[in-house]
Image (cartoon, rainbow, N blue to C red):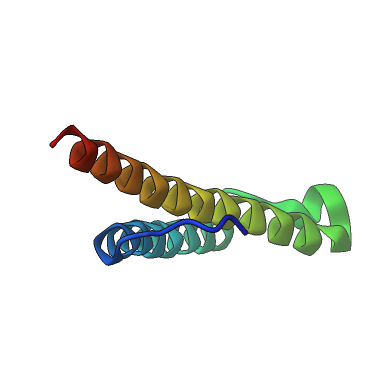
Length: 85
């Protein structure tokens, strides 16, 4: 883990965006599986559950990384803004 100072406001916005994205991704994924749009069991058989789980982990990983990137970007912008003055 990098040793960096992160402001509480940057951490709040990053966590808020990541949490909202996480919930939207999970709700959308559950809807797509329950609506019949994706029939993993027809193609993969019993391995369809594992394929679906891996895709869900991938989506949530992307959302988590985006939240961390947003937090780092907000922190860097605040540091640059403070150094100008």
